[in-house]
Image 1 (cartoon, rainbow, N blue to C red):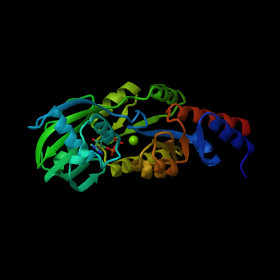
Image 2: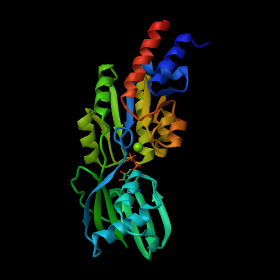
Image 3: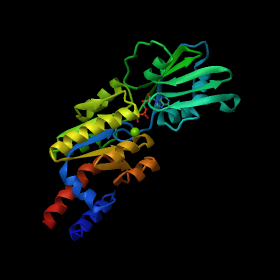
Image 4: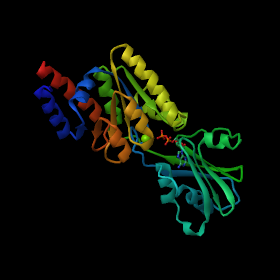
Length: 289
Ligand code: ADP
Ligand code: MG
C-alpha cells in the first residue's frame, strides 16, 4: 500500500506544474545521483533562428535558402522550422522526390533533378565530402548539391531562462553527476554547458549513441545503489526516457511520444522544476517516515 504522504507529495508537485505518474517515481527522486539532459528543447528553447548564410553556390541567397527550405519542408526538426520561416519564396515551384531523413544527420531529396543534402558534418562525410569545420557559436546546416559542397547556414537557439539556476540547485541538492547529451556539434554543446556549469558533455551523438551512454551511466549509478534520470523533449528521446529509472519530459513544446514515454512531465518546460520535484520528494519522505 502507498503511504498517504505520497498523495500529498504528488498533489504538491501538480500544484507546481509537475505531473508525476506514480508514487514510485516520487520516491525514486530521493535516490538520484545522476541527471542526464538532452540539450535542444530541454536546456535550450528549441526554437532556432537563421543567423548567418555562407552561400558558396552560383545562386542568389534567396534562391539558395529556397532550395534548402524545399528540402526541409519534409522535416519536423526545429532546425527545419527556422529555415522555413526565414524563407520567403513560393516552395510549390519545386518538384521533390526520393526524400530521406536520417536521424542525427539531416535530410536529402531530389529537387528538380538535383541531389540536395542538408545537415551536419556527418551528413557531409556520408557523401564523401571533406569540409573543415567552421568555428561557430551556432548550429551549422551544411548544404551539398549533386555531391559538391555549396555553403552553410547558421541557426541559433537560446538557453532557457531558468536553466542555469536549475543546474545550480541540483548541485546544491547534492546530485553528483549532471550530464548533457546532444546530436549538435561540440562547439555549441561546449558553449551551452559552460554557461550552465555542466562539466560532463557529449556532442555529435546519434540517437543510439545517447542510449549507449545512458546505459553506461545507469550501470554506474546502480552500482552505488543510486538512480538515474533522463530529461528530454523529442521523439528521438523516447528510448532514453524509457531506459532511465526516471524519464522526465517537457510537456509544453515536447512531443507527445516523449510525454507518453516519461514518468514525470514538466508541464511548462522549465528545467528548474527538476530540483523542485526532488525537494518535494525529500520533504514527502521526511513526513511519512
Ligand atoms: P538534438 O536534439 O540533440 O539536436 P538530433 O538527433 O535531433 O539531436 O539532431 C542532431 C543534429 O542533426 C542536429 O544538431 C543537426 O546538426 C542535424 N539535423 C537533424 N535534423 C536536421 C534537419 N532537419 N536539418 C538540418 N540538420 C539536421
Ligand atoms: Mg531535444
